Length: 488
Image (cartoon, rainbow, N blue to C red; front, side):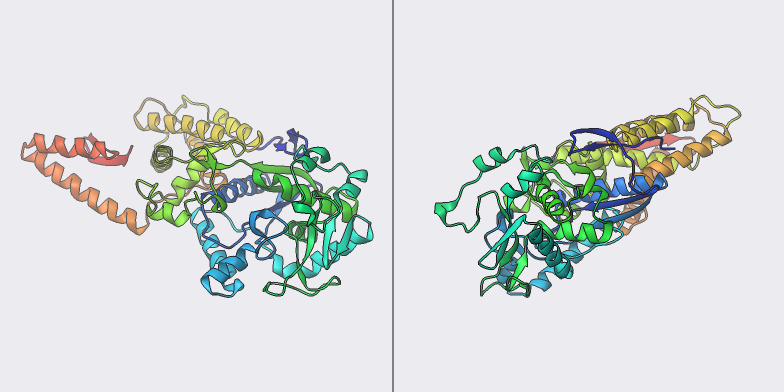
């Protein structure tokens, strides 16, 4: 079993032993998508990363409340305080109501996460459903003297805040560095300082999504929703906050400032951030126009894709790298992931058919300990997968008669693979769906044709079938019981 989970805390820049605020309970908040476009590979990474964290914490007997939000208002272009709402812009272009855009792409996101076998969060709050909570939090920040209102908008006064709380603790930026990286556009800004950020914005006459407030009609700043919803569902101080590393600044830095300014309390004990997925060395994202949406991966309908890749191939591709490492997209990497996934799942299938022996030549306890050690070390999925492939080697050796396992060790090995492959990593067999059923039928026909060729002493044709299949990644194995096939 898990002994002591260590988490790399972005706030302290080191691994720390995880200790929950409430014994055996974990509160975890993860920033979800802004739903104005199709979910892409960049959405899959945090979805899968924190799904595994969720699964492992539950496996370690924690009761976990996992909150992942849906941003359906207030996220302006370029993550700025000025500009058009991303959802409203899409609605205008499509000539639809903003909530039609929200509904369509929320359903699309949920469908993609389900295909990737990501468990649903415990709570999935929407920004528009928590306007009252956000207004109340803004009131608290104003009352504490850390914000100011001007022309119907409210801004957090970063310089005033910095007098009591150091600003930039999460990102490692000090206020001077932040000031150097910003500029006041020709003196037109109504902010006291360029580093101040909006926690409530006055809505222009043409702005569709707006609500009444003590400061007039407007909408919350993008950073405010997560502070308010995290507090509502997990408390003023909770265990884990996750998201992509691109959110460290300004989004998560702003969340810390808002919570401290309102509650005089640091909101989160452990900050976790997954790294980026890159394309040709550049971050994949809608704003950069270089993204491939997940449905395109599943169907192979994008120009950069040589063919379709299953959701489980995508999941394996992401988990074979540590969540804090970058992952660069390529067809070769995806095809390698596909082979790795198939090899692992074939071993799972073989494992169920193995027969026990009177003695064991392999220590299953050591494999189990190594698997737990990998996950306890900041959820190190690539090391875990490497250990599982040690198990795959043993499974195949037992099948070939080179190793042996007693009944109890065989049962333990089955339990280890079920726990780590299925329950924690979330891998599920792709056999049994319609496409794979058809593949099986076709391959059975090919094997019969090859067997008939051998019976007719047409060994040239039999070898040709075997060799051509081998080129496509399908391996034929002949035995006294007949021929079988598997993906290499």
